[in-house]
Length: 421
Image: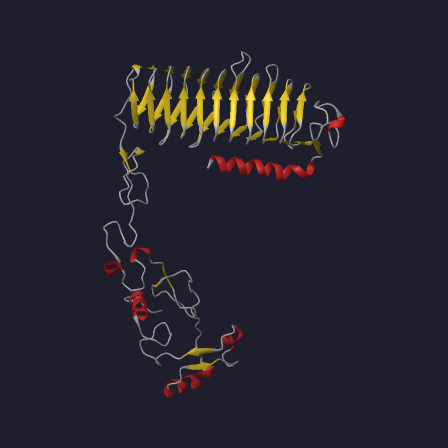
């Protein structure tokens, strides 16, 4: 859901603003950003859309600022040694490198979609949304710092060799295909939701909240300090030292060394099926243990009843799966989706008045099925009714389909005991 939301957001931004901005494409033959000869429409202003052509290499040595109405699409190689700030949409399809003296500042309005490689050796601030679908690496350079105050969605490889901090208000979602590996220093003061794999090879300090959701895996190979809250519904494999100074709810699988200082808590864990559509749905379950069972093919309910026992009208559809409604096309409330008639059909009616009472009486006596409506019965005529069925012609045919069957019985039962007005 996260992925879909932000992809949709990014393309919406592009579609909304693209027509308001001039576009310029970097084609070379040089490499300098601020050389007009390298661009199809001149060096971009903060209000221009930017495209870096495939095969092109761009050196950014002067500050670049992009406003929220712009897009930046990179199909080549970008080397940044200045201050690159964006409030717009950045799409990277090849290589974007922030060098040791470079600064990447993504504002709260920015959306970064990475389908290639992003490597950081300088300072990087993520205040908007960064979605990594391939490779994002923070180097071991002493200047390499990544601060997250917005949202980072990881569907690829996220590797930290320097310092990475998820600040208060920041949110990291490591999805099922994502792998987050820390070889440096990682601090969390925000929220981390893990459905993929998180591996700590050096130092990890948590003062925020980590939710390890099934089938997520957290592997600690070195030092992990918890001063916040960890909720484990997946797997924690601790081969290092995990010092728990606060709270760990352990409802999943724990492998390896137990936590130091404070043990984990299991008293709040109630495994069970949390899918309300399942046969064994458990309202008391606090985490899903994968035990859900469902109605088997060819059966009508969770008790194993089959069509022979659960198909009242013999139409090949289990009674609990029937869609009730009016199944007669001539009715005013005909329901084309209904599979079983519930006697609710309504038909266009008009009263025969004294103006043509004699015609009606004669038709009834003669056993004629219907009477034509003329201007003598002006209300019905104006309504476009051509004829009215005479009651009593086919006794028991309550839905007037010229057949007496179970549908008529159902219609009778539906009104049995009610008073006629």
